[in-house]
Image 1 (tube, helix red, strand yellow):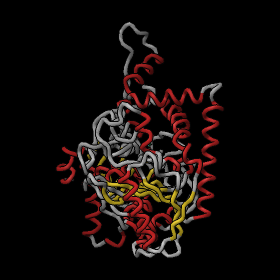
Image 2 (tube, rainbow, N blue to C red):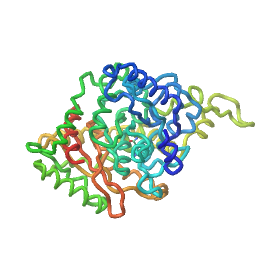
Image 3 (cartoon, rainbow, N blue to C red):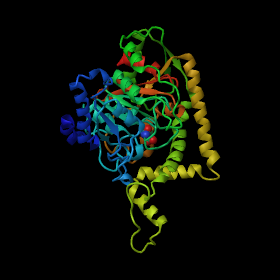
Image 4 (cartoon, rainbow, N blue to C red):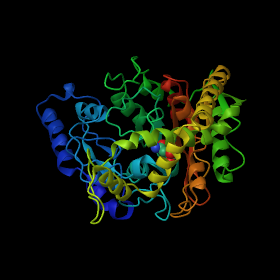
Amino acid sequence: LEVIEAAEPSIDAFLHVSRDEALAQADDVDKKLASGDAESLPELAGVPVAIKDMIVTKGIPTTAASKILEGWIPPYDATVVEKLKAAGMPILGKTNLDEFAQGSSTEHSAFKRTCNPWDTDCVPGGSGGGSAAAVGAFESPLALGTDTGGSIRQPSALTGTVGVKPTYGGVSRYGAIAMASSLDQVGPVARTVLDAALLQEVIGGYDRRDSTSIPKPIPPLAQAAREGARMDLHGMKVGLVKELGGKGYQPDVEARFNEGVQLLQDMGAEVVEVSCPHFSYALAAYYIIMPSEVSSNLARYDGMRYGLRVMPPEGMEQTAANMMAVTREAGFGDEVKRRIILGIYALSAGYYDAWYGSAQKVRTLIIRDLEAAFKQADVLISPASPTTAFKFGERMDDPLAMYLSDVATIPANMAGSPAMSIPAGLSKDGLPVGFQFFAPQMRDDVMYKPAAALE
Ligand code: GLN
């Protein structure tokens, strides 16, 4: 809490610091320790966590960085939050993000801008820039994020932290505010691969309250990370994804990535090139599927059920429909409105097959690409983000440039498979570069081993 107080004026990672709750939770752990009951404490008891404000927390304001949720206090905890509490992990507060997790720089937050701890003139990435910056600036040892197209991994790449998107269905989405339900996944942000593994073990596992939760145990992740730390990768086949590199990738990013590939080889891994030809269409298909789901999920913010309500101005009829219209006009930011409109268009009669139907077919082709690639290699690798952190404002007037930030991370969301970003050194101007690993579905353990070896 002292570090947060000192760092926040220059970083602004938090939307809300839950000081009293965190201290009370820490006290509970202290009491157990004092009573000689240390044995009964879970492994991470007492280790605090920051939570992306896209995840609901009972009694603690949750806004998704949107004015439309301002003032809403959730009456329940997300499953992942319940699990943190059961593990004795104090909750430090809620971190900043792009409104409803839509963006790649955290600049679309309705409330504040978060700075990159490595260079405060630069963005921390997004949408989970707050969680990544909080961990990067040592304000919290651990954080939770949500990743729909890269919102855990890209900010991790830009802040030199470890960020993991688990297998879709491996971590409960109950109480994670929905952006695009078929792509959203909750995951850890940490400073080391082992920390991320330990946190994913706490939050993961089957949850009957999430209909897409997979009723199977998660493979042992911390064990895989500990094996990796021995830095022996003999017998492991690593597939370098041909399509994720070259044009559009910053030379510095490619240089650090290639050094990482060399290190994997030095540790005994066999590196082969693999091709995933349909990855080139992933971004385009994502920007059809994601807005379609966004337009449906955000229909619930109607001025009736949560947070903000704006009454129609004088002269306008005082009807419920008008109240909804003016509430949504005032409560949603420009990027969110852009996506709702895109989604409604893609789903409208006459366009549905051409847009949504085609995008779903591309999704199937991406899944097949990955299935084929995992026949040739145990894990796949690529840069996590095509560039290092960029300056504030640089991509705000150009949505397409902003969207390209996720070109390397989106394929894993489209396929539901796990992927993570780990730090791979710095660019010439001193900014972090992220190295991405992909693993097959429900085999998150497979990427933890080489990631721990390389970090
Ligand atoms: N940056 C991507 C987008 O704007 C991904 C968002 C996310 O993963 N939540 O959609």
